[in-house]
View: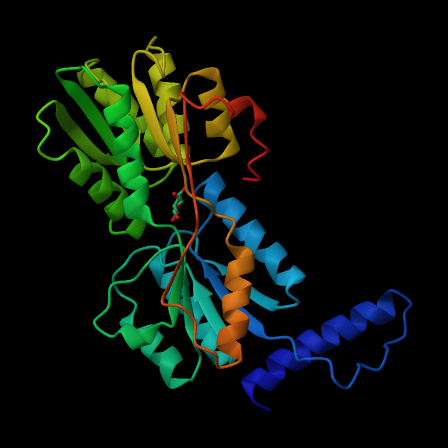
Length: 326
Ligand code: GZL
């Protein structure tokens, strides 16, 4: 029996067993029921509220779409993601979807997927490769625009100031959001001598490291005009360090963050954060729609960007915002 057949038999027996255990007798499946596709999804970790929300949304979307999801979490390790992809190939899933933790190092395993005839969908982050045929498409955010939106708020907030010292805390090294949020931000203020990014340090998208980075910088200097942090988790940690040092976030230090987690929006409403650039993790339904197209042999767009907004202290509708869902 092929691996695909074994995977189906296992999933089928499990669902049949569930039916009997519930006292129900297995109804004869309607002959014309379309076969449920199997998507192997290799998530990169659970490093932030954003990531946890992303995983939950994808799992809910698979149920809504009647897609069988084989889910593996790589715990922030590329080698685990590669192993997960190899296990999906062995199980002969219909589609592989994964959020590449970093951009480099995927060619070999994606070549194996291609040779196995399994289409690959990039979710949330890009890869760098010479062979564009190794993946069918990308669904996620435009991180360059997010960096530009952060800088646009900075320009508005600091208009009239002659010298602005900026601390930048970046996300995971060599990840697409880290590279493009930095590029979009820096290119927008490039050439404007009023702005000085006096330090750029990696917080790896982790709350603990965001706190550690801010605590270490505050030991060296309190002359920090603006914090530009690549995600809310690091920002929440940095705010803890700012308050421990007796400073007032959102006033003594302007805070610009990315993601749009509920926690960050709540602090925006309290005035402790000045700008939240949205990066939605709620892309599960689009992933399932694209996966079904790929499984049916249909072409998909190379890039499907989420539509996102920016929340700032200048907005009049903050109190009316619906729950964020992550
Ligand atoms: C962005 C995503 C980033 C989030 C972080 O799409 O890859 O990873 O901004 C998460 O919160 O850790």
